[in-house]
Image 1 (cartoon, rainbow, N blue to C red):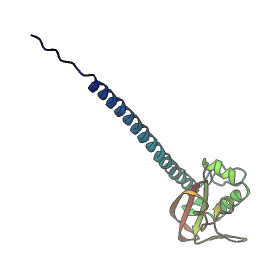
Image 2: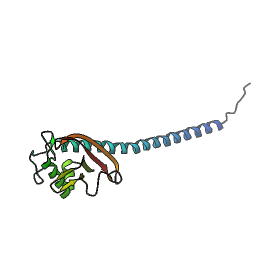
Image 3: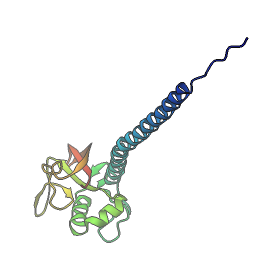
Image 4: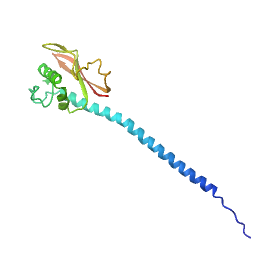
Length: 174
């Protein structure tokens, strides 16, 4: 009459193990993927921010500044140009302001990053040649040795009736 078959429950237990194992694998893979995306994204964000801040700083430097006849006491925006040429008085004021109060210049540039600005060839004032303007102890040669995430921005301008190349290094401290 009727045949009875015994159904084995071993296959069901093995299937449940497979589902649990696969779920754990997917979870671990998802965590790893999210972690790796966040790690590389952090460095990209710093680089993008450095580029953005560097462009803001160079745009400010290569403007007339505010007020147009600014000095160290009344400056609200640092700028070294007059008639699209470097104004030596403004350049010297920028140098002196940075030398006397570097942190104020960072506030005026609205940046938390360190910077170093220089012109090739070097510029000079009444007291001799100057290599650059920026963080104390930094030179154009050692800036890349003391920093991480260094960005270099290049602009062309006129200084003493000659075309020159100006550079801005901006970086994130360790």
